[in-house]
Length: 300
Image (cartoon, rainbow, N blue to C red; front, side, top):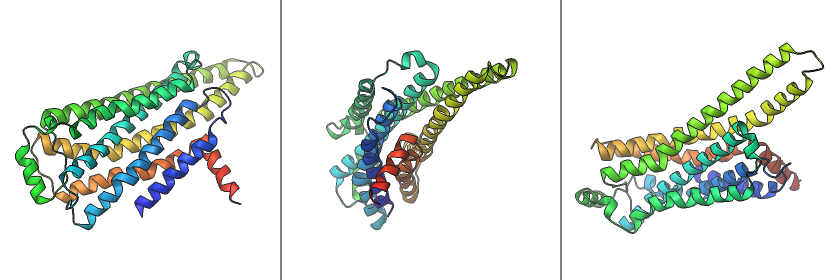
């Protein structure tokens, strides 16, 4: 049921993104963000189509993996790859909003083509990291005995060697998310400074003189802050849903600490929840909400 909802919800978001294409008020009015969010919806759709059904099969067979070692490796690495791709998309959205709030003059020159370049890089850079294990055994060197044991027990779990695992975790997940939170810190600090400065102007000037700053402040707060908060919620949701799984994997492999199988299954399903939650969060973004209303009205 969760898988079906995730597929339909993300497919609806992708269609809504296509409908809302070209409806902005300016050349880059949320255009880069919309492009990145459309790409993220495609990621969640792929995740729901490829990853979640086999997770359901795992549950049906009490955590056992019946589809063979090679497909297990493909399944795990594609799932991790999609996580890294999402992290890069989230970082690019944070960069876009940072430029919009903190560097508005430079932001004028950011075009849709730059957004397309962000999407391409966000897809290909993580893929270069996570898909290498599919063509080389270097990533599993030193874990041969563990891999044999895993295959005999019919369990599907990551078997990166320790140093590779930490490198992948830091480069593909930890660094992008840290950079994202730093950028959002700058964004909210800039908004706080702007609101504080505007409040002083309103108190210090006559009624006729402070109309324009107040109007600009209202526009800034209502349009930008609301969108930034929505995007911040998406970032927080991604972090909450993926950190537990990465924590378990790193602790399990690097510290040789054993966890029960059910705990790994639960953390995996928490990551699935992220792909189901995202389309709901996307619908709070005004251009998407308007497009969804347009789609619903077309059926009346």
